[in-house]
Image (cartoon, rainbow, N blue to C red; front, side, top):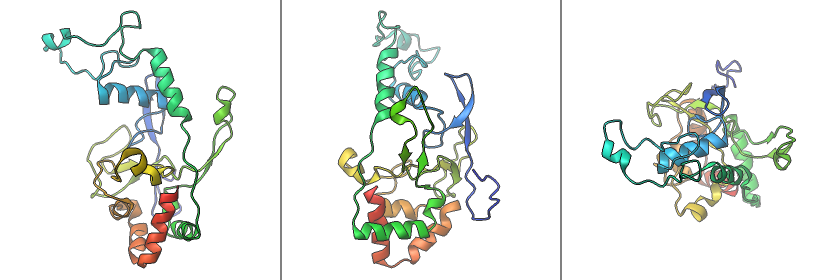
Length: 245
């Protein structure tokens, strides 16, 4: 984190500080578009309730589809099971979802000479100012499969001002309406294979990686302008590198 940009590189990533319902304290936000969730468990339960309306341990009423005055709505049939904590996705189901999400592997890198040239351009272009390449995970006795692993997610998990063009004007904890968490890039090259599309950014406005780069502003304006000054071959090489992750 460098909130005040003390190194004068134009990048001032800051951590989000969010409330954890599980731990009942303020913690570092790491997941979600604005790093609004402190852990995979709360991120998963929030998605189950908010995105699908499924009741879970942290959100026993689901997403709150019914207001207090909508009595008929409240009495409508639901999927809650009295024998399973009176929830639709009880603790065991949620634990399985969290285990799966926590241990889902990323695809193997695909390296070619062109990709390596693109990597050089990616680094020289200043992209790693936010998309930090690698980290060593903490030592963990409870999760040995994740303990002390060298990972290459290409993110700093910090909030950055991405300019007015990408602003949603919606604050979330410490994040302002202009700030977004740096999205991890590992696995991005197989987006079409997995999801059937190549739409990027928080609202899917970018139809490909090139457009996503061109929407960068704010702290990433300098890197975007550098990308624009590259010749076509160089831009293609940089994109090929990103697609190899």
